[in-house]
Image 1 (spheres, rainbow, N blue to C red):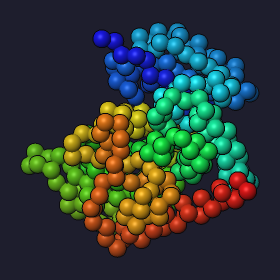
Image 2 (spheres, rainbow, N blue to C red):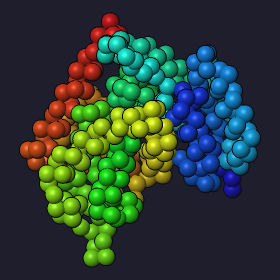
Image 3 (cartoon, rainbow, N blue to C red):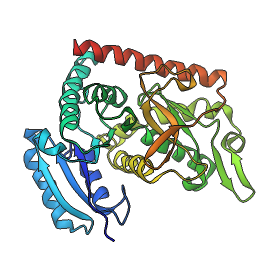
Image 4 (tube, one colour):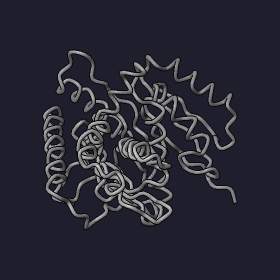
Length: 332
């Protein structure tokens, strides 16, 4: 029997990430090859013409799974009945702007969008925040959409997770699909901690620890971490644009694993609401290793944290606490 369509909202849909993301959703990359979708696309009024152009292309592509397209600059219309919301739109930091200026703009945007989701989204709507500062934007959204369960509001650190997998894969000359259980701890920023302490690689002799196979702690504790932390800046330098294709792909990975579930014995990184696990302050949106089953995520518990890692976890938590305080000051 055919499945009912799932309504998926993409904000900032006329932008670069949105343009890369919507065909992936329409093709079944996010929710599966048998799941029909109705796309809701939102952007700001100056982008209305470009947004209509994206809608025209979606129609022209004749995606069999795509059962409808809503393209609008009205946040209420965009949020009506949506089951999944991918929040790509935000206000980017521009040259000469202070952090508080950027935060103030994003607080305003996410307050408005949270209120619309609160009032008009489907029950049990799942939310993924992509726009930076992603962790804190997700926290603001949670504040103004109190009826959406805190477990349903997440932010994207899967891009960093995938970047870490890619770096290990290249270093060891193995298939990226054979590498698993890296972790991104903390903020989607340059303080994030890409951690391979518990990561493994599938080999002909069974699973082996990444640290054992790389056999270079100086690289793993130095260049590897900084490469993943600074990858976005490196792509901007190379492309003259920020990551779009990889961001869109990782957003699909995040939602797919959340909805469909993670493979047995495998975890992924998601920015989720901290319950105090690993001594991370409760009340932050913080990236943890998680497993997913039946549409729910759970933080992987009981992993050993050495002193090097503890310092990294604390540093990124401190930055998130500062961001939270700055965001809440903008609400005053």
